[in-house]
Length: 453
Image (cartoon, rainbow, N blue to C red; front, side, top):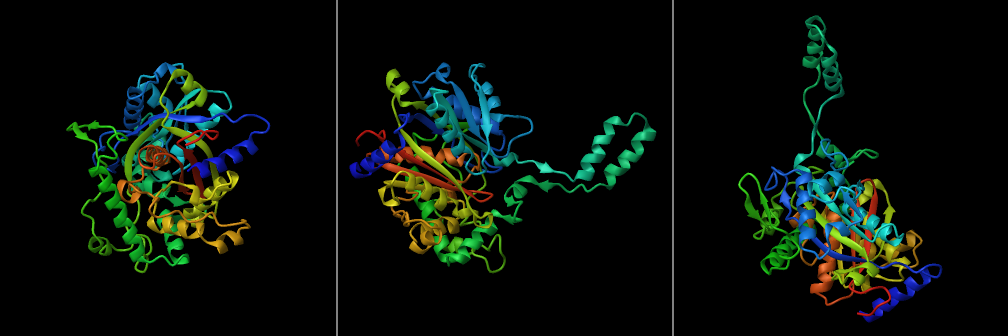
């Protein structure tokens, strides 16, 4: 671990010849349990989930609401009734009105984007403390009506007499009534016309990833997540939610199948490329609701106040790639991030790659370790595939779910807790693919860049 930290220190010294780099720390973090869409959180909106998580992260921290300079929250399915949902969440949670808040949207990396935007605010000296995270209620994705129906309905309020209303009502009746499902349209790339599952099929074919390999990894995700919960590993990361209408105590992630089996997985039919595809509902991430919030601060502020430090946010990178192969995003973002810090995947003590699809994760690990893949892109060397015993060790989105605007924040929080509680220190990398052909990656550690482990 000392060797890895020294490599990071040398890289940081090269970057900071002009000005010292402000260390960004995470003081505290919490998340809700993850609930299946139309499941346990059916009666809770994204605002409800976000406000609960904001209150909880502050209640469990020595940081007071008045210490917070800014609030940044990621969200994808932004509700019409809560424009700039970050501000609505902040006020609903009871935070002081003078604290500004804004929402960010980078598809599946929205929660991660909120965290890295917060870090940039701190590094620029525009804030000392930022509350950042992500929230998503995929349950409440809207239904969309045809433009003809919308146009006809828009005329109705302007019709004053029955003579004017009758032709408008006829137009409404004749217009297409069948709604479009916004969630499905949002999971389809408009530039290439492919659903996210179809892009996973592309990678499965190109990297020769079999159905059995995908199902075995999916089974492992459920087994690892179930074991972590049984051992109490998630108890401090996940808050209790008393959700209406029954107000029963919900604490455990709802999608985990402790008794999942290969027999059950092999019975599932291809979901996106019938009949010959290999990507199924069982080896794809679940549609889920949830929220995660973290408190970030400058190291100087945290040390001056005597606040406990969960970990350090060292660096991050976002990269673009082919939208038809959007699942490769973590490879490009991780390569950019590790190369900038003179590190390789072997220097990571723990790695989290979001399990959007098993095929996507396995394609990434294959590409990360491939010399030919690196050479074709002009990289001096392959960054290396993560050790499978260090990758997603407590399960991932296949088992727990993927609330798209929240997942990036969850990955960072889970990774930091692993470095603190599992490995006794070190460096970690969290990465995810982003619809539209992008990837995001964050480098975190248990010690400051100039410190020792």
